[in-house]
Length: 344
Image 1 (tube, one colour):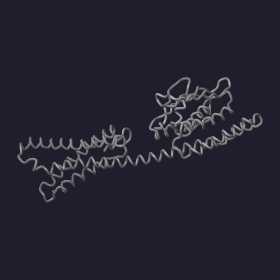
Image 2 (cartoon, one colour):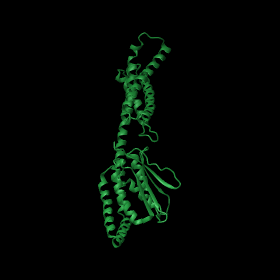
Image 3 (cartoon, rainbow, N blue to C red):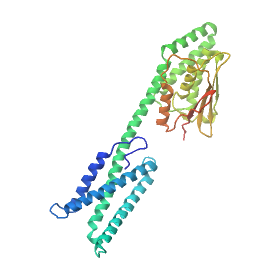
Image 4 (cartoon, rainbow, N blue to C red):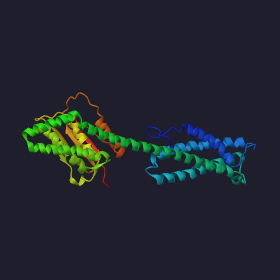
């Protein structure tokens, strides 16, 4: 019914309204037996077009409000009940208004309802037709929009995973990792072996989650700890990581690579010095059902950044979960709040 959304119309219904009013207004008198040879034909046709225009306009405005308050995809039964009530109530109101006008103009008529039965049926069918057309067309475009949204979401998820894999397979990451491993082989072979094992876990995880829409928090944390191990070897005491997540949340879900991206983002934009370490803390706010990731602000200059990591993550959560990522303001910390995806 409603052709306008809050910010952007689902589609432009101007031509549908104009053409629909003209065709409906002309066709219904013919359906009910009126022919051009009838001297009242054109008078009835103009009345029919006028009634159609009024009912169509009312239906359109009513539909805009209805779809805003009770969208079909969220409250279908309530939506349907209101539509049916609207059809009969507004039809009765229009018929009653016509009756009052006739009463004022021609006075009381003994056989009024029998004589005007055809006209009343036209009003009823015009309302039903206009509402049905709006509902059907709107549902079609809503269905089409959902298909596009699902395709875009799948594309975004795949793009995000690809970007994360590409970032970790870029020459800088491999060079730094191999450089760290080379140093460990000469100084601590046992730790070098562990480094290789954790390094392999990272790439194994990338391959495993490539086709997953969500992962458990336990899986994401296990992967994150492998990533943290590599980074702590690289940055030493210049990087401190603290996880305070209760195990009861481990079966909840997050989007793949969420936590790793936030840790990587903090390492990328902040300095890591032994005397002034970068502190990254991850916890869960049980009341709000969010994961809180925060780090102290020690900004460092970087040559260039696309700033697509967080933006991509925001779009993924907004599209897939229907909730947004929040960045509470703080002068001393950068804080990110990620909605937990319930396992129910």
